[in-house]
Structures are given as structure tokens and as C-alpha cells.
Amino acid sequence: MNIGLLGGGQLGLMMIEAAHKLKHKVIVLDKDKNCCASKKCDSFISGDYKNRKTLELLANQSDTFTVETENIPVETLNFLSNFGPVRPSGNCVSICQNRIKEKAFISSIGIPVVPHYKIKSVSDIKKLPNKLPPSILKTAKSGYDGKGQFNIKTKQNLIDVFDELGSLPCVLEKKINLTKELSIILVRDSSGNVANYPIAENQHKDGILDTSTMPGDVAREIKDQVYLYALTIIQRMNYCGVLCIEFFLSEDQLFVNELAPRPHNSGHQTIEASLCSQFEQQVRISTSMPLGSTVLRCPARTKNLMGDLWFKDLDNKKIVEPNWNLYKKSGVTIHLYGKTIPRIGRKMGHLTELFLK
Ligand code: ADP
Ligand code: MG
Image (cartoon, protein in one colour):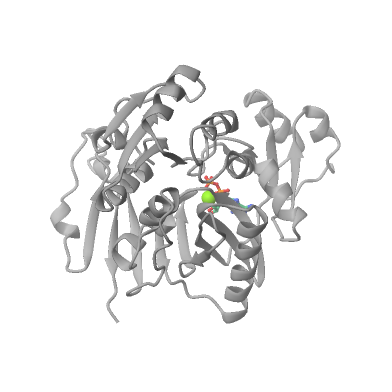
């Protein structure tokens, strides 16, 4: 089948690799001609997600549609649904792409989220208590890898940052003590069959995922709570596709942090460690194949390879390719995404280490 993929980042690239193993073709639409997926896809369309003509071009070549980023306009996905299945749907993506909507949905089904306020105008700020706990202001849309997030200490500080952001809708979240960060990846097909990978335990550095270990070291009661919340969310959304749910554990309190309507960085382990990777699942669901097995062959850890590794020579600011030989151990696979320009804080690749039992 021909899969129309919206977005051409590294997640798209790894989805294409999975699609090719199943003999499917992928047509990618992205603004950036040099995006990671452009080199491996079967056909590439460079253009705007909102341009009708561009979308028709994609629709004419595709049997089914999916996304590798949540930042696709809902109108785009709804338009494409006239030409074939869109998995996940525009409605599901629109919940996940907006923190205000996402938190409102999760709370509405009785699942805890971190205490927060919606901020849409200065008058919303004026209504807040005068003394704020240490908090994080997050733009409602388009944030990733800690981008669009600001530490807030006082109300005046909040007014200033909100103003600098051009009064974009935001959420102000209480900063909580993180005992652990967890995530779970679920897959659900169009008939409602659901499966999940083991819970991953994640370490972040500067708001960016650093390592993710699957399975995580999680107490039985917390595991059961994660499964219950996750299943409730995916079913109540009537979700179709791969869904990642991020959790914060603070002491023994579990909160849902955010949802990603696509394969997720904390699931890259599944490429080597699982019988069927999260990327293959997205392809299988898009093409109406039965779900693959989510069984993990062995524990595994993924570590991100950040652009920072190219800047070890800080004095003369030369970009130096890391010495990959240092990483080549038995049981370790290195993935590089083909990004030509390394930058501090940019995900250039990842490595996965398998821990045979
Ligand atoms: P992103 O879309 O960038 O992943 P997140 O909301 O997941 O945004 O935030 C990134 C990271 O920042 C989290 O994984 C966590 O480490 C930290 N963080 C975010 N919100 C909070 C919070 N309310 N309290 C403490 N740490 C937080
Ligand atoms: Mg996150």
C-alpha cells in the first residue's frame, strides 16, 4: 500500500524503514526538502500542510494517511479523511497538540494531571493568587524537548514572559518533585484491539529525554495504575494508531504529563528489543494489518545522541564528528538520522543497548 506520511523528521525516517520491510511505500509531505525522511521515502512532496493543491497531490498518491508529529493542522487531517483512513484521526491529534485541550480531556475522564492554570490573556494572570508556587509556563502548542517552557517565580515574572511570548495561549503548571518519569506506548487498531509495550523509565537532561529503559523499575501498584489510566485514555479517545503517554511519579502520586499521537523517543528500544517495533505497529495499523507482538525479547536502554557530542572541542568551536568506535559494543546499535548540521540540544541519533538475561 502507499502510506501518506505527514512530517519528515527522524520518527518518519524510522517509520519508512519499517514500512519498507513490509513492502509498503511511503509518500512524505514536509516543508523542509532536506528533512531526515526525504532521503529514504518513495516520493517526497515539499509544501505546506494547509495548501489544498499540495494535499491533493499527496492524496492522489496515497491509500492511507498517518503522522509523525502532533503539529499537523486538524483541518488537514479532516480533509485527507475524504481520500482514505487517517490514523490517528484529526480529532485525536488535535487533543494531543494542545496542552489546554489535552489536560481538559484527561481530567474530564477522571485521570490526574499536574495542578495548572490555563492562561489565555493577562486578565487570566490577574485572577491568579498573588503568591505563586514555583511553576513552569508552557505554550499550549508546538513545544517539544523542553522548548516553549519557562520557569516562573512571581506573578510579575509571569506577566513579562507571557508578554514576550506575544500572549500565546499557555498553561502554568506547578513544578513538582519528580520521583520518576515513566511512559507507556500503546497500539490500537481500527477494530479496537489494544496492546502495550512494557512501561519505560525515562531520564531527562535540561527538559530533553536522555535515556529510556524498558522495562522500567516500577512498583506493582504504580504499574497497575499506569495500565488502567493508559487503557482508559486510548479507549475513551477511540484512538487508532501508536500512542505514547508520559507520566510523572511524585512520591506515590501518579500524574499524566502529556500524550504523543505517534511513535515516541522512549520507544526506540522496541526496534531491536521487541518482536515488532513501535514503527512497524504504526505501519501495520495504517495499512489495516493485524497488530504485531509487543513482547520484549530482553531489557533494553536507548540513549539519545545529541548535537552536543559534536562540540567537545569548545575552545575553538570546531565541529568534530564523535568517535563512534567508542560506542561500538556487542549488543549496541547506533542509529544516526542523517542530519547534516549538529546543534546543541538537537537529536542527531540514538543508540540502543540490549541487556541479555
Ligand atoms: P516536552 O513536550 O518538551 O516533552 P514536557 O511537558 O514533557 O514537554 O516537559 C519536558 C520535561 O520537563 C519533563 O519530561 C520533565 O522532566 C520536566 N517537567 C515538565 N513539567 C514539569 C513539572 N510540572 N514539574 C517538574 N518537571 C517538569
Ligand atoms: Mg514530554
